[in-house]
Amino acid sequence: MAGASLLALLDDITSLLDDVSILTKVAAKKTAGVLGDDLALNAQQVSGVTAARELPVVWAVAKGSLLNKAILVPAALAISAWLPWAITPLMMAGGAFLCYEGVEKLAHKFLHRHEDGGQRQAERLDALAKETADMAAWERNKVRGAIRTDFILSAEIIVLSLGVVAKQPFMQQVLVLAAIALAMTAFVYGLVAGIVKLDDLGLWLLRRGRAAMAAGRAILLATPWLMRGLSVAGTAAMFLVGGGILVHSLPALHHFIVGLAPANLAWLANALGSVVVGMVMGAAVLAVVGGVQRLRGR
Image 1 (tube, rainbow, N blue to C red):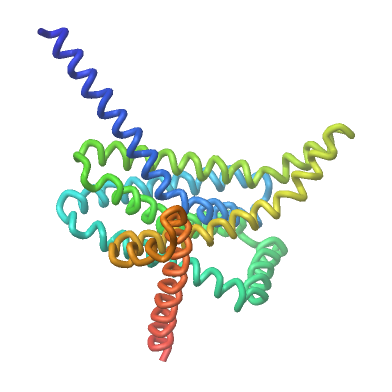
Image 2 (image 1 turned 45 degrees about the vertical axis):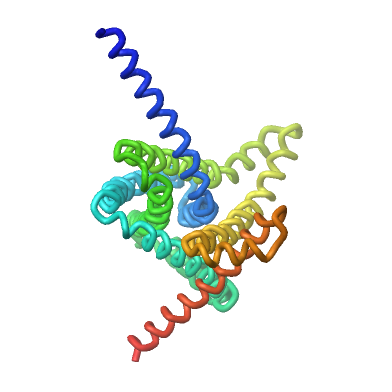
């Protein structure tokens, strides 16, 4: 009897882990759209830091990210247990915020490109040129800013993951959210650490002789394009994921969009419809935020 009970327990554990693995993969796909912008933003946060301090800064932000998720995961589980009706509105709010971030990012890029670039350059030159500048305090401010940004992105990831496991048993919710939190942190900041060190790798290869010079030069030339590509992909993913959340949360809208194309192109209609809805929602939220800011300014 004891042996049979042990085998039954092991079978239950195996089934639970299989379910957790499947749900974690689904949640990872749902949150993948946030990662492109997460990578670009966090890699940019390290800009201006000396080469020797890049990895310590990334590690400090990664620890802050784990702390963020240690706060967000229990909060998400509490909402799932006591306020399950709030999950869909929270997902829609998260989707609307993603769309707002995308539109705000585009507006800032095209309307304030020269001002923003000049301001960032002036700040870096001021911090590096002053002999009396407290570089440790400057670095701490950059880390705090990166952790604040991570909190918003982590909240989006946890809310999206919660939507996947909302109807599952509590233990599965705990395991899936914990797995997503740890995996996303390791993935994002592991890649960020690699990205910020690409230029060092390129320089190292340039000094290895003729055989490695071509590879080193290619890496140095490709790194800025990689950063731009991540930023563009992240912005597009904001509209695709954010708009997709809104579309799928409104069945009538989803059926209308899918019905605009033949059955074999329903996926394309869904994707394009999500982007359009995302951009419209983002523009609407940006207009409301701008109006509120102007009223408060008055």
